[in-house]
Image 1: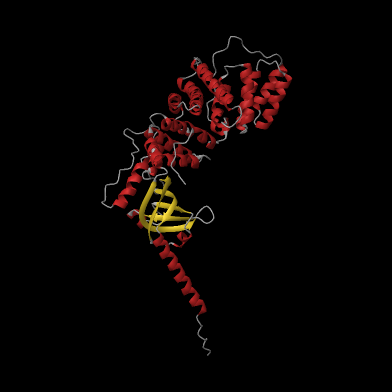
Image 2: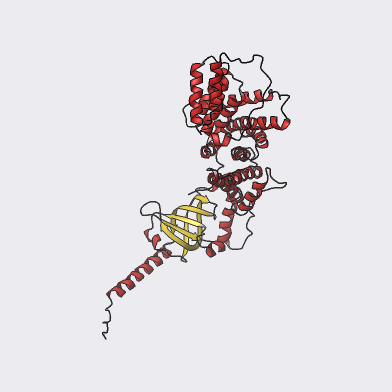
Length: 448
């Protein structure tokens, strides 16, 4: 039942990002007219020109695909073959058919390895389509990284046409540069090169400050770096979750869950989460001094039983590497405390009982909150305990959970026999009373 864990690897994050590729990529600016190449393409016939013009003017995407395929079949040696494949790729994007769009992009690169639209689309699609469980995952990763690095190099050498404004040129360059840098950062994350992932992901976030995928990856890079940067990591996870929610993305719930998990892992509770999400929604970067602090430690109360529990809680709600190291030492260690029964429920296995125990004043006064969960498998009378019963127990620490309230799980629990005897006698007495009520003679009903 242990809920706290090390920060999620990006493999899981990649798995939950399922935005349709064409929809997410559609906002990219149309390319400016670049400087003429050394060899100008030429039409070989009027029929070739008419066939090309037909699919360019087609408004129905399915009809356009048919016209493109007819053009490629009829004019296989056309100087405009790459242009036809580019339109085909873009049309499949429009149809949300990413597999076909990727095929078209690969055809483009066999004819022109430097074609920016194809390189950009493949890099854009890479984090969505990569599957670490595939037999050729290593090949996919290597190829995706190489394509992104090559695309970035081509883009860096791409000249701005004289008749294009800086704003128009930036509108074309920035999304592609972001796709390439995001793909490079993604590959670094998959290879656990977290420090290397930071620079490309930071650059991508500057070019696309409102892209949840890039921001969530950047957050993961910060959290997994050595040492972890919890403040920046949690901030960018919060911004990714806030932007996804505002856009009604199908991934919004998963991204918010990821943020919640990491925030509570660091903070020890969900206190302040909503404020961070609201702030992150309105700012692309963390404000000066932003910090997700660890919870303050409890002051000694003089109650040895209560202070012993607080000491365990303080050691584990700090989050991060400190909590992991502390838990490594604490797991399996014996524990013996005194509390009151909060609730009792059947255990996950037949014949087992879970006894939830209150120790702290907060747990005793809060419905549904408890501090200890005893896993009992050898004392059948444990199921007879009732809320408020005093209970003394011992066992071994086996797990802990920090949200929505901190509690420890104790396995192989042994509850004081005197408490169980009291519960059994009470249950027997209650059963006798109910039996007596059932057997008591009823008064005759008076008839009018």
